Length: 144
Image (cartoon, rainbow, N blue to C red; front, side):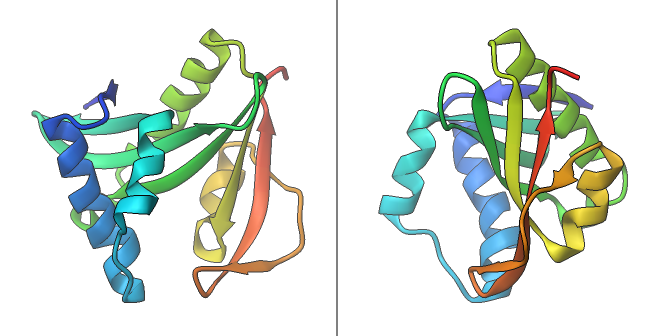
């Protein structure tokens, strides 16, 4: 398993859109718009590969000089539960620390909260709805 940063607009990036669409959008009856995808250019795109086959993706959006927001985390449905998400989150945290960030925040779907809690993310909000699904804001202080 290899986790690495991928370039916006690359072939790997195009594969990441397909994976995100399959895992995150289609189940909700949603599609990506060009406007939505244009945000990706300003974000850090991190992907997991198994023998050069993309099996996971997540994005990090810079909020300010100290905070990154983790978004669009997706692992191929046939590979979930194998530690791929965990490897991508750990890679993201190392990347953040190496680049001077001290906090990662995210909006977790209810079903993902136990996963993030297992990686020491803390719930910092009440329930709210995003894309029609219950979420809670979570964060992790990277200085600890």
